[in-house]
Length: 179
Ligand SMILES: CC(C)(COP(=O)(O)OP(=O)(O)OC[C@H]1O[C@@H](n2cnc3c(N)ncnc32)[C@H](O)[C@@H]1OP(=O)(O)O)[C@@H](O)C(=O)NCCC(=O)NCCS
Image (tube, rainbow, N blue to C red; front, side, top):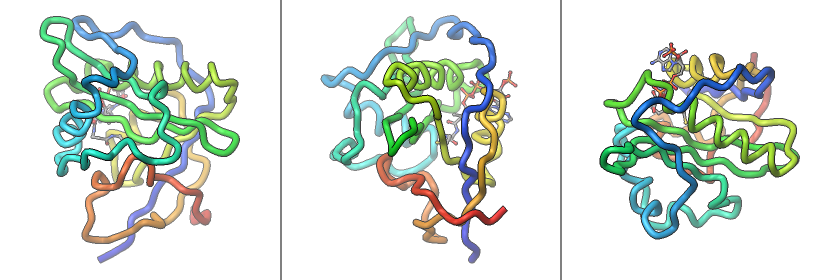
């Protein structure tokens, strides 16, 4: 069993904004319904167990940094992003889109909302962690304009645990540079 590695990526050059895909709307966090919807979307997107009911009780949680993508037709939640302020930079913690809605620009639209919010807080740098073996995520962040700052061993590494089971507040502490 081998350790997993993360790329710490930083937004370098934002690409011109593409429109939100047709039939989809990106909405701010709705405290009356999103606390239960987001764990369901997480489970579908990551193929992982749902987060527990207290998933949002972590110190950095900022409800204004959570956005949900919904279908216009039914209001079904199909994706979400969670971001917040870290020490001196904005951090995108978790982003997921359900399989049936992928490759239509939903994740890009969510990221754009997250980056816009972090910028509105006056944060210049925006960073994210992506597992080095998570090709769709790394490709997405690169396509959006992120570049790899460093690569480090996952400090929470449990070789038996899926990446996706980590909590939204636990991901991405800085680690030693390995590449
Ligand atoms: C990664 C993920 C969020 C992408 O969502 P998405 O809505 O399909 O992404 P988008 O449609 O906005 O993709 C934008 C660009 O990212 C890149 N990209 C996205 N998915 C990709 C894939 N599977 N393979 C290669 N490139 C990909 C492409 O450049 C794509 O543009 P294109 O479709 O015009 O080629 C989604 O696959 C997912 O939820 N995966 C599981 C959870 C995860 O890994 N989350 C990220 C880490 S927290």
